[in-house]
Image (cartoon, rainbow, N blue to C red; front, top):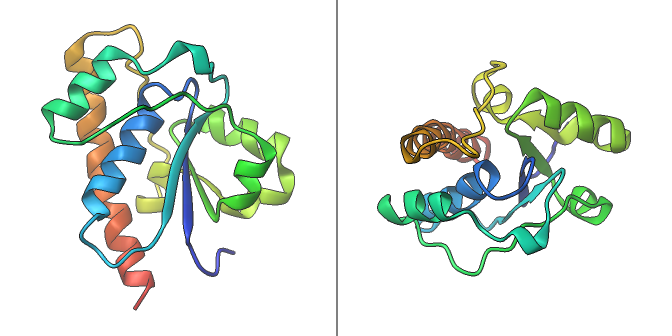
Length: 156
C-alpha cells in the first residue's frame, strides 16, 4: 500500500507519445496546486536517440502544454525504486513491470485502474494521424484530472 506519494512515473512503450503526454499534462495541470511531486516518464523499450515525435509535440503545443528538450528514457531499476506511484498506459506495460520488479507490485497500476478502478487502456497513437494523437491527449487529460482530484482528496 502506498502511504505518501511524492513521485509519479508514467510508463508506455517508447516514451515518445502517451507517457510524455501524461507527464507534461500532469505538470501543467498541477503547477498551481500545492502538490510538490516529482513527475517523470519512461518507456519499456525507449531509445534516447529517437527523440520526441513531432505529432506529440504538436498536440501538446496546440493544447498549451509546454514541453522542452524531452529525451526518451528507458525504464530502469532506480526509476522504479525512486517512484512512489507508477502508472502505465496498457496492461502489457503493467505486466512487464510487475514481472521485472516484483518487489514494486504494490505501486504499479494501469492509469485508468488507479483513477477509476477500470481496465481501460490508452491506445497508442504511434504512426497514426494527428487526430489520433489529439484523442490520446483528451483521454489522458481526463485521467489526469481524476488523478489530481484523487491526490487532492488523499492529502486532506
